Image (cartoon, rainbow, N blue to C red; front, side, top):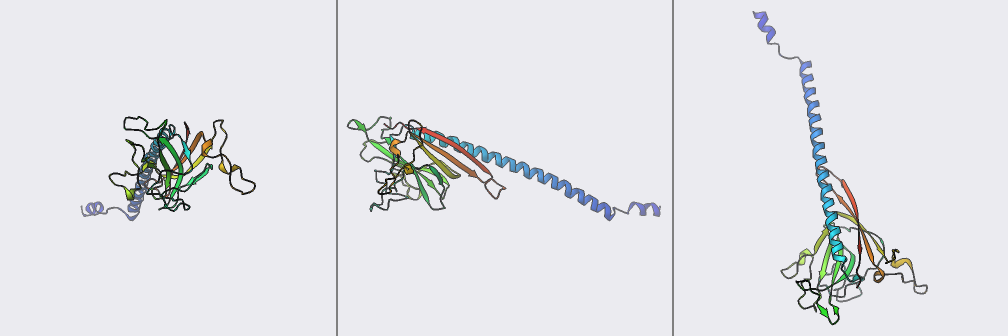
Length: 262
């Protein structure tokens, strides 16, 4: 009986213990790898759907905003008390730096910087949608599309025409200057890396302000915004997902808008 009891109390050997530990580590590694991979795929899918929503919303906004516009302009004529990129040649500091129809890539700037992208005009209207007339022509409000390096977003500044009585539009402000009478600039798209811009005439020819130069002064004399009938935005969006150390989702979408130009 003593011999029988002694045999039952031997336990497991060191070799058996090592085998159990190795099997436990193996199966734990397999389960954790599968779980992390599943989470990673889920977050990638979520980020991809998020950028899809951003692209669709941005396209809808740009078409509805620019489609009925009365044309692109090189600089705002309505003073802006909160200019981000002021024209250094105008002492008041209420006018954005002039831009021209030059196709190319417009990257998001560094944190704390802004980059003007496009200026355009639209007829002023009342709350019920009626144009506010200035004789035979409607008054016009102006808008500034710009890139915000801090939020990596495309934003719009609204400049309401002060002479248009009953204008439903309010001049907007950057976040730091928002008040009850000056709403925040509208965010159109986020998670941007850059935007590629192109401009076309009614016949489909590419418009480039730098394509021609004055032989005497060297100044550019190519076609500009007044000749632009179609504007193209190619939004390049990147997003870093959870469990990733770098941008893991990258998408681009092309938005073309035909201008009314009345």
